[in-house]
Length: 247
Image 1 (cartoon, rainbow, N blue to C red):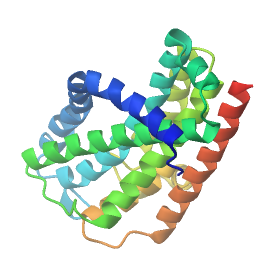
Image 2 (cartoon, one colour; image 1 turned 180 degrees about the vertical axis):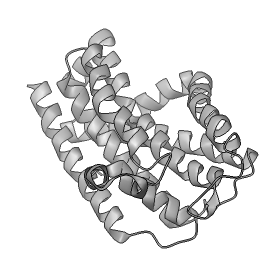
Image 3 (spheres, helix red, strand yellow; image 1 turned 180 degrees about the horizontal axis):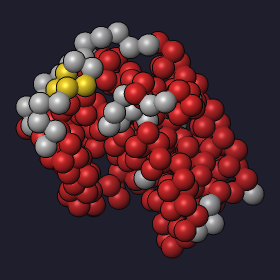
């Protein structure tokens, strides 16, 4: 991902917006995971999944899901800037390229995802969940997951015409993936007809890789290759969408 002066400028602008909203944003990042931890992690009691307490199974899944949703949320920020503040029009006349813009916004999405992951890690420790969160493979899978959905978010933000369109994309793409991508239960427990298509979802591979690394196991290398490939594809698509929007 190119880090030119233009991409750094776009990224810095997003950081300033993030800094201004940071207390409220951290609070919103904590609400849903806290509810899941209380409702599923604690209330499930002695239930075990894959030989581990359910809370230990749940936390890596929440990290995968939240990193996806927070990286995806950069699309809403872009839409607000486009539709209300006309910031995108200023970027169009600024001496920056489409690649600069995409790189800066993708980095902003990844930054949001990293903040949400830190919130869940702290929350997991508070609930007594101690896993191998310092593993490089754990963070690589989480960052690749954020890269995939931040790149997709930038592409979609250039295509939608309103917040209603953005909400529809979230409802039909992100929400089903959040619940069916191995976050709350093993995909292997589903019937064969449902299991096969879920293995094509990036979140499924991210959840498997993050969970395996957190358990001290060796993740499937194919998951990393798939996430990296999808991230690059979506990044290129975002470049094309930004180029068309500039025209």
